[in-house]
Picture (cartoon, rainbow, N blue to C red):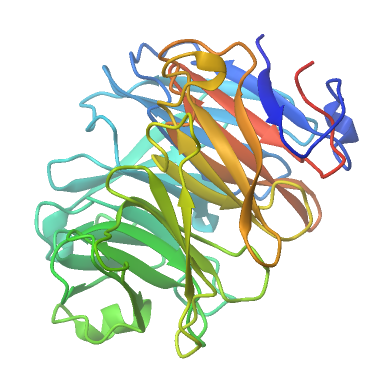
Length: 418
């Protein structure tokens, strides 16, 4: 099995560590599609789901034909893979999101828009079932336009003690919140609320807590690229199909600039004032709004220019605590970059905030980069349970026909090139 590689900028060391020494070492792994999957574009999109048991689960989508797979790691790092082609299919690339469904016995739940006015739900179980189809929700069940699902995000929009996931979906200029998702009843009695965005159509969503109230808020990126508007789920529920009202906070680009998908929310200081990262239309810059808080000071805007060998910088963006210090780093994918001069091999750049700037800390790509590999075309972060209340973040990177996973890289961590 080929190992993935760090091009170390600040890290030092060598040798592949054992996964059971995870408290202080780095671990990486590459995996191809499991048996039963015939997708031509496997790993075109991926998501992760939290688990009640130790370990982590990644759900991988493919196209041509459509497929879904689960890659599940136990606490010792052993990988179990299941998957298969999906009848009927979905758009390529699909719009998908994942979450834990405590109502269904702690299984993961995956939502995917079918591109024809419905959202499909799957169980992300391990074992022989793999990602099993459960139910679909048509747009009309929530009174939404047939474009429902142009963007999807799971969020806990109720008070902090609530553990039932809410699905937030876009449908042109409408934002829909499907509360307390229960796959056994969603098709019969969906608990929907929606409102109309005053900025017009939106193209991306992200969830995070930027207000003083309990629960996560929802950021919507306008299709014009000129505004990111943040609303509370309570606003959506109270609007009852009318205008969403005044946003908690509106973020705008500088003169002559604009934003584009994707967009992500994280916290690079662990100070309860998150950051919002968003791509530029030409994928040459990623903009990071620093210390975003409704009612707080105006957030700073940090532009991160693409590295010299970058070509599609910001195609994928994710925040995660990859070294276990309780402070998140920022991962930015560029699937068309040319590491070591290999065209289209792709790479991911990791950034750490040093108190003043977001600085590039490491560049990640395959140890044997291949032309057209497109490493970094999709990114996500899995909350990896170690048992009890201890967790670490697992960085998951999609490439053409492969998924790479990276675990627990510390400032003194080893180079996991084997």
